[in-house]
Image (tube, rainbow, N blue to C red; front, side):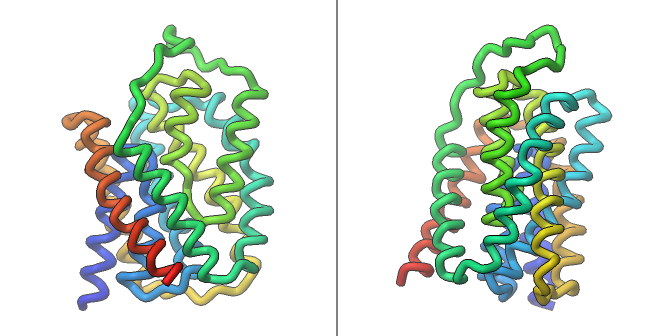
Length: 253
């Protein structure tokens, strides 16, 4: 019963992050699976991808209904990350658990700092609502994000949203929804590669975790409409920083 409660609580937090911020869910899901639910780092990153795919897809549908997804930009961004995500996913299963945990912790610290010190949104270059960005710029940003997604088993939304806003000049109102498209595609590519290597997954934990995350994503979307994005980022950033420091100490000591 305790495991079920922990899975539901952790899933709800992950869903709130994905639904409200368009990212941050997987960097919370993986440590929760490892330290609260007893998964190995390899199993946690694989399960985290599965959870994030389903949750992101749910949030994507909701944002699409409201016209907050830039399909062309997101498609170019995501397509460029498919091969890097698959290759990095195949390599990650050969990395020692301690190294993988330390690398994940370092990335989580970076993500937490970005959340705690969000940059102001620049003036969008496509303010007329059109969906046009240089294909080369989108491809370069997408390839880098795909590699991170595959190697560390994260959806990459905490990197995708800033990239969409600052590099591709997508307005924040559309960046969150568009990032969910990128997360879904990249995470799926990484997961397919990882499933080629047998990994034991506890579905009795993953199922309630995912269900709670899906419900949390809907609540997160509504919460984002009432609370400032910067405020939400700082809350999740503080939680993530504490988790990241704990993981880093655990990996090093």
